Length: 496
Image 1 (tube, one colour):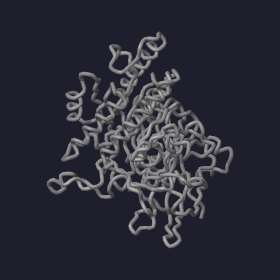
Image 2 (tube, helix red, strand yellow):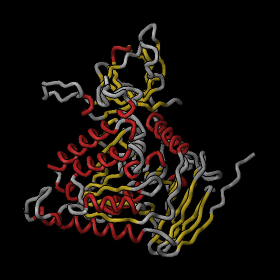
Image 3 (cartoon, rainbow, N blue to C red):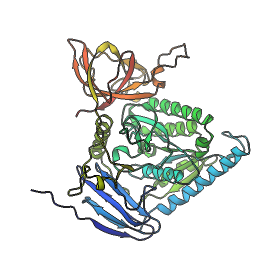
Image 4 (spheres, helix red, strand yellow):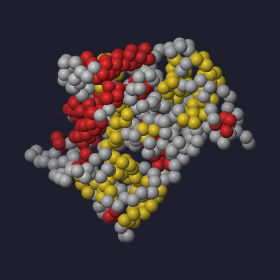
């Protein structure tokens, strides 16, 4: 029986309104801008092109001037709203743009630039976005980044993501920084903040990012806040080193997306939360804090930082969707699958197939014409001794308050512990491991926690352990030698 033909439906949007939609698992939707102007999270849509969204994507098409869009497929939820926060977001963008222009003018006139100088008013924007769970922090970061790259000033702002539960353009468990030269596209929540070049199909060059990432290894900040603090500061040092020789990047500024736990003032988490916010403020020399949808947090930030930093309360968008734990877990699986195998993409029922050249020429996913989204990973067997594997801190770390009076930890939160794959209970089966860069050859002195300061160069999954023969089967995006490599194990697991 032939598939039911999809019937396109037109929606007319008035000025300053948006079409909001949500997708169920295994479904997709096609949206075409028929006439007018429209954007998605600040990235402009091209009139006449068909954009595809899939893998439980939840997004909104906004228009400043009015437009007509054509929808093919059936979202689980769809409606039009004229109550948006886009005017507030647009005003924030204009304020940040003015900061960039003043910073560029000062650079051209060779005036001194530095943190803590008397010329704070001409510093580029270094923005920290804070807010509770499901407040729209990531959407705001994306909008501000996309508006900056569309400003016709050749801005290339730095996107920093310190939410290990999201993973940005990499895998969950990482924190990262990436220069953003062009608008970040939207098609799947597996790549909400862009797609890393290592995971993008080879033809998708214009939108692939080259992030610098560190492996935290867990989704929850509370798992090891001291480790996350150190990694944030490492990331900040690297961003400043890069900006030393990149004037345009420096004046373009930095926008930092944070986990919701930074806004959760509950129990023993309060001290860790405040310390991690301070780590971000110090590491990236923050001069603007945006607090989304949280009056108490805004008051706290005003009290703590307003003397030296501009703190702005930002309204929460009415289109923000409540995301539960099962949804976030499924997104993690989408991210893992995308890294190793490419995209799982299907057209809405009844649409012309990708092999139909005339139709496919007008199809866009992530801002690129659709070609082949599948990758060919390698599964190969290696001896245990080829790869040195570590775990940071104890696997299960009791809080300090739970220790006996006078007792101290045998293993610290940041102490690397070597993992022996031949030992029962190693926790390596189906584990995701981050491969680390080699130590700097210019540094002759080695130190115990050196691997904490090495960035990520890739990921592997151990799919089988042959303990009698001391061998293991590894899944990697490409065939590569693991001899002499170092990897860190976290708490993420993945199986096909």
